[in-house]
Amino acid sequence: MSAGAGRGYAPSPEEGVACAAGLALIALIAAVLRILGWGHWSLWLDEAMTLDYTRRGLRGLWEILILDGNHPPAHYLVIYAVRRVSESDAALRLPSVVFGVATTLAIFVRCGGRRRAAVSLGAALAFAVMPLAVHYGQEVRPYSMALCFVAMADAARVTWRETRSRLAFGIWVSSSVLAAYTLYIAIVALATMLLVETALAWRRRREDPARLRAALAVAACTIVLYLPWLWAIRHGLHQPPGEAPQLTLGAIWAELVGLAAGRDENPGRQASAALIWFVWMAGLVRAEGEERWRLGLDLAALTVGVLAALWCAHHWWSVRYLVVALLPLSRGIGEAFGWTADLTPARVREAAAAALAGTIILVQAPALAENRESGRVDWRRAAGYLEFEAGKGRRGEILAADGWAYFCLRAQMTRRQDPRDVTLTGSVAELQAKVATSPDGWVARAPHYRNVPAEIDAFLRTTSPWAIIDEADDVHLYRFEKGTLLAP
Image 1 (cartoon, rainbow, N blue to C red):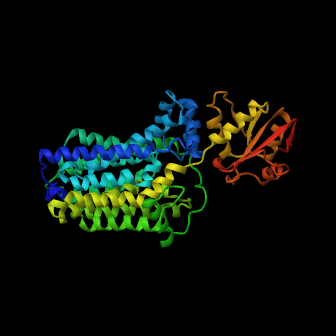
Image 2: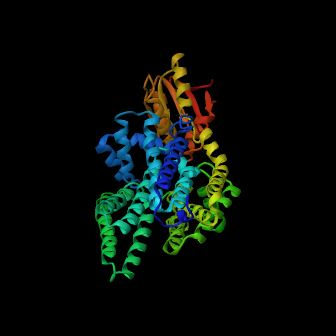
């Protein structure tokens, strides 16, 4: 790689081939990391709810999404299409893997592609091995899909500015619309991107009027095409859940640690995150002109800006709400790779880049290993236990005392060789009535789900559970026959 590889220049054919090989290897790494270990856990609550929604048919899916008001429909339509082919966990997770790999490629294009090989490959690698990106690249949730379309929109914007291609403009528009229809938080990234692009185009409107027209056209198309969904959910919005943590420096840093070197259930490691952010800061210092302040603005909007918005709305937050900030984080790390390429003598340039890549992979390895071994809970164990008991003659109706147990257990029980449905009981009176009228069966209670009447737990505590499945959120399984809870 020549000394100019970190900045814009025309690569030689040999460098082009080497760059393509490097990108293919990074894409393979991204795919492998997102597939490794995904058979170690089952669908958790939100994933099971996604499957449950898509089982209702197109009309039922549309109605529940409008009633809920918290989720745009694009990802659900993808899962609806997938489950018509297969309902296996692997099939349902595959779209997120594909979107994750596609995001890696889009970041490569956004950062300049072969003309800035060191920057582009470094940014792509950073995203490929980011634990949080891997985590959500495995889930049956919309985060990976939203990341992909935001990255594609940004890459198309840069490509259009350089080529004025109609295809690039079409991808810019369509990706922006699809991102908005996939995840609400993606709108923050789109708004930041379009506002900045419009402001820059306005300053150069005399010498380049097409740029301003393009920015305004993309913004207008996105807004107009998104209005039908906003109109559809106008009556479905409700008070956001919970209470957001206080917006302190400590709280912000905790989320930034998880963003850089953690995953959803384990926020990450301080030292690993500090090193990743140090590399990002080096890239920010190295970046030139517009990209330098774009990096800072994008990251601020998608981290502190999102947290502030959630705090103002009294909405609880999680590191998942910062997931789109992985894009500017990866771009900044890519700029650090470009700096390494520019400052290192030609004879050791590849070795220096490999050392930086190895360092990033090394500090992310512990979180990646944890994600592979114990990324989520495993409700298949609870379903397997009930199937085992059914084989011994203890079958009967399955009642869920809370929503968590209902969705997770139902996702597993209805797909077994002997499919059995699960019934949700929302009150102690409903639970007692079901126990009294059913000849025999089971009651499932996930104690970590707090949003249940206290009377339900008081009723269940009158006897001991037959099993507590640690891998399934410590779900308690109680046996009843002839209207009475039985001790083991």
